[in-house]
Length: 610
Image 1 (cartoon, one colour):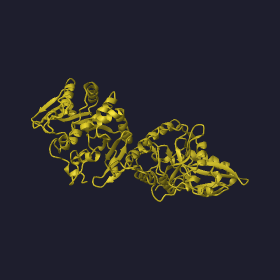
Image 2 (image 1 turned 135 degrees about the vertical axis):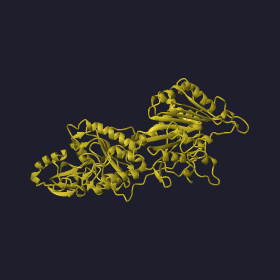
Image 3 (image 1 turned 90 degrees about the vertical axis):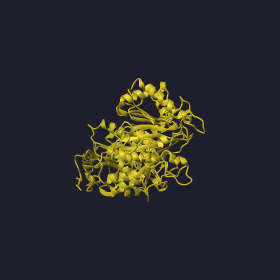
């Protein structure tokens, strides 16, 4: 490991320190200990802050902090953060003037390089581990005030409206970008390495930690008038870490009256504690945890799965997450492994709105066992997703299953309104924002209503929407509302694809009777859509006894309509027989490769056993 200089006169903080030393020569002040963090040199191949943030975005908090801990202790820390800044303080105790200097990091803890770094909010468990490993402490409230008072760069707090996402990496990144823009305005006058404060709340140590085990103490976020927005607060569990939190490292070794001592000893000494504390002595000057703080989680309705967090499934090495919304919607996210996501390949975020009457577990599918509900064997979106991942190796595919409490999207939209659709999409999309994902909207049966609810809310379909697919689900199509939005979107990019799968449902029989009208079923709606698009696109036709296929825009626009001379019900069969796979691959070189739409299941070996 390359050794750092013990004292660099090029550091803004150390240049200031030299001035302080000159003022304190009458105390025989001679700091012989290192004024830099004892961290390995940063590897030339180390990830930037942005790359690292993307790689941890889907991890559970414990896994996320394990990665941050590993990255920091391996040396992936900006160069400017390593040289410490001295702060000169005095107090009078028992008629004696005490003079001390403690040494603080110029910025909050970060991963990455000087050019691209990511400020890392942490729980006190991980913050304390890092501090211990680097011979450091966390600050007290008084120390935070001293840091702000002496900071060369005082940034204005930039709060983000509180939501459930405030503890997620995308919001961390959003705030990180805001701080970076603020800091850029003063770089010419105060380069990186100058003491900077005001932009985060500090994790602090205080007297209350001894009587409040399992809590985190936070304080700070100073306004330009010098007053802190956040008073000293121990209301959060120790498992809490949101975007506003920062970890400021303070070197344990400090100087008092010309002698070397430690922060811990000073805080325990009644005559000296006032140098660092406005609470008197602090008997417990560190956080104590035997393990990562337990996170209080709920369970998803009707399951034993974890609502917030991730877990690995050993068989297929996938990550999954449960979320809930304010509108009675269960959200199940299935993603590739953390290692796969760390490759930072282009991301496809597929929103799959469930068919009427089905649960997420049934839609994912599994191998049938005696007594199982037949719904577990009619879609197999889980296995079809795995088939896609095996072939789309240059992409990261995330599937978001959406189930509403009414088990019918048309009824749900009537109760909550179309704007709630946007809120659900944003809730999920914000978690993946750093990946800049392309979004796919799809669904089966009544699930198509979710897509139409989205279309009703936007004046123009945005560029992030790359594919829309209706799996026998376009009942809600209306010419006046949807024709122009869809056609303009298709014309706007050669990457955009629209796929419609349907069958001749108006002649299908249930108990000897038809059950949809000629105009209201997917057969009628598909022909209406095709007629609406005829004036704007040139279609190639391929007609057979089994299918009517209409294709335009080099396959980016497709209608695949199943004939039905036997008057059967093919509503779910279209999905089961590789329908989801086909809807995701139309218009690509992989269309009809290794599978056949309406053929035998191409994914049988990928169905989960239970």
